[in-house]
Amino acid sequence: MKKILRGLGAVAALTMATGASAQLPDYGIYPSGHVVTDIDGGTHDIDAILDSGKPVIIDAFADWCGPCWTYHVGGTLEDLYMSIGDGGTGEVAIFGLEADPGVPESNISDAGTGAGDWTLGGAILYPLADDNEIAGNINLAYYPTLVLVCPDRSTTEVGQVSLGAWESAVAACPGLDSGDDPAIVGSTTETNFSSCEDGATDVELVIAIQNNSSDAMDGTYNVQATLGGATIADVDVDLTLAPYAYEEVSLGMASVDPGTNNINISITTANDDASNDDLDVTVNVNVAEDLGIGDIVLEVEFDGYGSEFGYGFASDGVAEADPFSAYPLFGGDSYPGQIDFKAIGTWTDADAGFTSTYPSLGVGCYHFYIFDNYGDGLAFGDGGTLTVNSPNSGLTIDVDPAYGYAATPLFKVSTEGTGGFAGVEEATTLEFAKVWPNPTNADANVQFEVNELSRVKVELVNALGQVVFSNNMGDVNGVQNVMIDGSDLGEGIYMINITVNENVITKRLSIVK
Image (cartoon, rainbow, N blue to C red; front, side, top):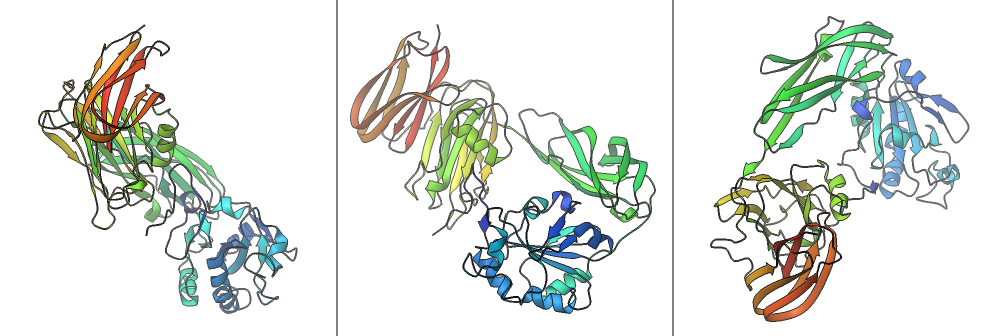
């Protein structure tokens, strides 16, 4: 059975074993100003240690964390301390830092709390400390996180590895460097775009330049970005940086075409080390496919875990690229252009799929935001399928079922929908559905016929996705009439969702005042 590791809309710190990847410091550069005060009152200036040319190993643990305790009592870091640490050759400094801010310092040496006495009765010789800075310094995502900080401040998650692996990692650390050495160490350029237009897309190019030297930096450096041999950005950057500090630099807006764009960004000003002057950034621009006529069908087959699936449907282009930001906006009825939303957990039948129809869409751009609470899409076991199609135009978008936490199928409608589906029934048990008068300034009647006993619910949803009318009709059969009182509703376009068993049929209602 699958277990939920990360819920959409909330991110929890998790206890995990070796094999996962932590979020490291921004651009992988350890921040300055960290002073550790150990449980014996000793202070340790991390900057001073690194400036001396000595790497630093940090075991960020929690007093209550089982995997942390298992690795700790295994003695690997203590053996390392006695071999190349301060108990041996002195090549590396080692710290065990209790990183949970809710745990007091006294718990570290208290055998009656958490996993036990982390000093092991005084047998642990490297410094242990209660430290509330380390979580922010490495963007801590889980316990234990074991990192190696090299003198040039480059930070790597090494993990719960053997003594030999630690020794090799320490030996591979770059040493201190002097002179004039600007280095491009990363980019926060947005790399994936969804566009409703066929033309070029403007992208802001953002990089980070580190002073990769023990000498202060104060100078002007030219930075260029090229695409296909053509220069798309060219700026002079004034940099005043302390040793091993960095600065984010914007190269301004650059125009890129639909598809994959491989951009090279480089420092062209001569300096002492040209090996770290380049960075390649790939920007992908996905252009909406044209589904033709605006009578749209979403068809989903589950992978055995339908309770993990949810989706939102909205007009225009993607407003939130991050699924962990988009999901609560849909659920909170505030996603721009929201037309429909089905929350994770809506489908309790693990194996069955569903079909949702959206007739009479106008000409324009639309997108679905497909969510998976586990993060493996519809790809578990035999896998599932997901398609968005317009039966009246015969065009279909097949969505890769291994989409992870989220996918955003984007499409255009070039011809207004007719409100019907040629050759496709709106639901296997629904003969017809109509709404009149439409538009209306007061009441509206929803009439439909169910050809077999089915569970039926009728909801009216406003432009913000809020349910403003609901009638759970239970099990019904035959012709049904539902009256909606629109006298207190504001002017605008509303969606009438008729749920028949697992199928959802949508009609539009226009209220004018």
